[in-house]
Amino acid sequence: MNTITMTRMLESAVYEHVRNGMIIGLGSGRTVAALLDVLARMSRSMSIDMASIRFIPTSLQIKMKAEELKMSIGDESLIPSVDLVFDGADQIDANLVMIKGGGGALLREKVLMYAAKKVVILADESKYVDKLTLPIPIEVVPYARVYVSSMLRSISAEPSVRVNDRGYPVMTENGNIIIDTAFSSIEDPYSLEHRLKCIPGVVEVGLFSKVADLYYKAREDGGFDVIGR
Image 1 (cartoon, helix red, strand yellow):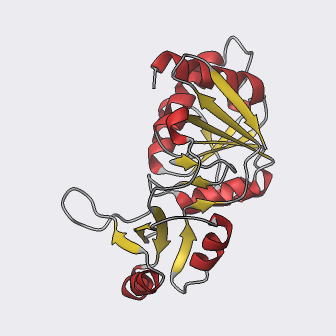
Image 2 (image 1 turned 120 degrees about the vertical axis):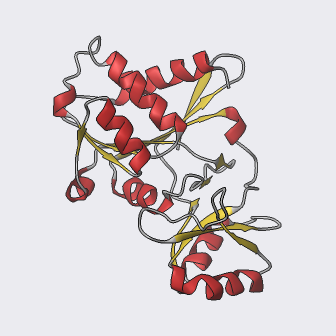
């Protein structure tokens, strides 16, 4: 995606939604990291008092980025009062259902999404598809790894424990593992999300059937669209 296009989209999102005194939740990944750079740069021209805004990150990556930019970090006690969440997505279908969790923060991202008064998703047009096709990240307690994998295979899924480049299981910041699970097709993501969450040992599922408030879509032609629910 053209960097200029993405920057314009992020500038628009900051201008339209960020206000003094907010509690802002932050998803994970490169798009959210880029958004923080844009916000820091735009804050003076928008007369934003950054000291009045508290940020709740979902990952150490984004927390460190916010700290680098001298932003105020709030703790989890503020989650019920979150005004706004900015986040990205791995894939978004025609009904605005998402697959998220490529960075491993799906549990915290879903908590913030359900708690927030407003959720804004930021993604380039390559993430928008008719039907979901990516493997679904599933956060699982390590004790249940073998059981959950067997249950996933029993419904004709293909589970694979996520590992790092040295072959060790990737651990989430909650101390769990991620099982990336491929399905031959995802016809009913709403029912599938519920079915997967009912497997004992599953902590959270990277299917996000709760529709966000706004979706920004950066286009290859240099423009961007804003889609409401």
